Length: 175
Image (spheres, rainbow, N blue to C red):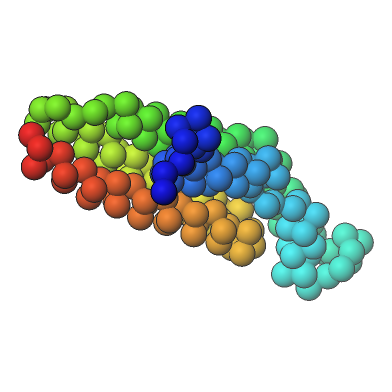
């Protein structure tokens, strides 16, 4: 039994559909400063000094505290913006390469090769995106659990892209 053409729903290309979800999850991470909570960082630093109040610090402790505050100010003013730019660059690159690859319907070997190159670039940018997020976790010392969902989504996107690339082998036979 078939469905009337006017009643058919548009099929969702899973690579696009999943990428939209992944992009949104990563954007939300960036909107919340990658999970950085300056107050918690300060409390953690104070615990590492073995005090609960600034008045309990000695001269050496005050100097270390000031360095910590300067580092946090740099993180907030500079590092977060740089990481946002870098992560957005990866996201845009994946998006661009996926759309370009999908727009190529190969009718000759050169087009098939170009399509595969864009698929490969998208996969490479997904790996780069994972590395950027890993670097962010290391520098900011944030909770890794906040990133686990995004990492799983990126891994699934890589799997989908590789499956799409593998399914393109049918074009080789027809060419």
